[in-house]
Amino acid sequence: MPAANFDVITLGLVAVDVLVLLPEHVHKDDKQFVTDLIIQGGAPTGSAACGVARLGYSTAVVVRLGENTLSDIARDQFRRHGVSLDLAAKDAESRPAIALVEIDALTAARTVFINLDNYGYVHPEDIPRDAIRKARALLVDGYDLDASERALEAAQGSKCRTVLDLESGDAGRLKKLLKLGTDAILPLACARRLSGEEDPAQALKALSKITAAQLVTTDGLHGSWALQEGQVIHQPAFPVKAVDSTGCGDAYHAGYIAGLLEGWDLPTRMEFASWLASLVATRVGGRTALPKRGEMRGHLRPEISPKLKTIVQRIGL
Ligand SMILES: Nc1ncnc2c1ncn2[C@@H]1O[C@H](COP(=O)(O)OP(=O)(O)O)[C@@H](O)[C@H]1O
Ligand SMILES: [Mg+2]
Image 1 (tube, protein in one colour):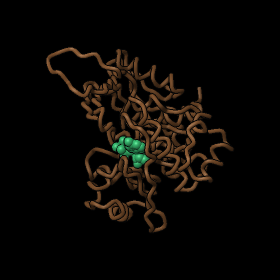
Image 2 (cartoon, rainbow, N blue to C red):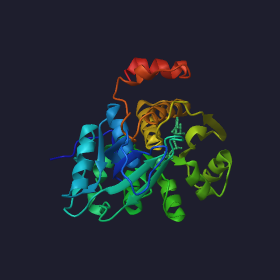
Image 3 (cartoon, rainbow, N blue to C red):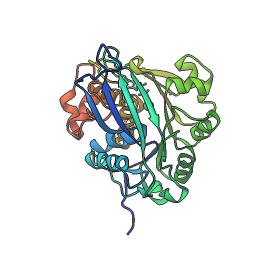
Image 4 (tube, protein in one colour):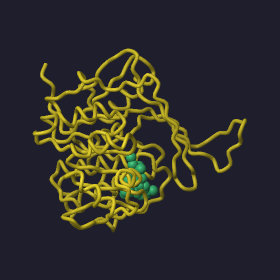
């Protein structure tokens, strides 16, 4: 059976998150009832896949999952968000990562503990080269480095945009991935590490010497920056009553990819990405507040530019 065509294919870390909003006073060696304690799918590319799928773009994840509870949860979570598992590989022992996320109720900052036992790294034969070449966007991260590199290589010479979310991993390998991407959206900490520059503008300029990719860097509440024709542009974050910043970067990638698929210019992509990310910050969990297609209109706010407002209303986002 020939594989279906997908708008977006993602390949990278897949996790099951257990998230808890910590009470103001944590009593060690005791039991406490808490208001927010949830389990849901997580990780950068996994949650970004859910973000674009909910906005209505056909999306598939390249993952290796098995016959175990964590794999069952990961699959269930993808299905609930409308993400296709047609490109998923099966291998009984493989499982996703499991992450324990502790959220500070005062700052919305999260502390993450990750376990990768029996993690299902994607094998070379799992990479759907033809589906990637037919897709409109591929998103990879720096956790499954070998597979990310192979998937990016598969996309070369096709029309598929190659979007990178690099936050951790060996600097030399990440720089190699940077060269293979058309769009690289990096948290500022990673942009600093790869460029040796502290200032966002300087970091982007230094990175532009090693890649032709559209470079974007994000820094939480400070917003995001991008290089456009040698100039640095800045998109402020949208202030919200934030409870948990888990998944903001993932949603930013999802919004940016939606903008690529719609053919929007860079400032509009960044504005939409920031808006989507700000919604995610309002609930515990990186996927809880992801809007469905048609729901962004209900979150319009005065800061949204007239241009984006018109687009969102016109195309029914
Ligand atoms: N607390 C927040 N309130 C509103 N927007 C946020 C918040 N945290 C992050 N964002 C938005 O999400 C984007 C990505 O967040 P960031 O924390 O830089 O990424 P990551 O989650 O990958 O570390 C930011 O540029 C900003 O637009
Ligand atoms: Mg991130």
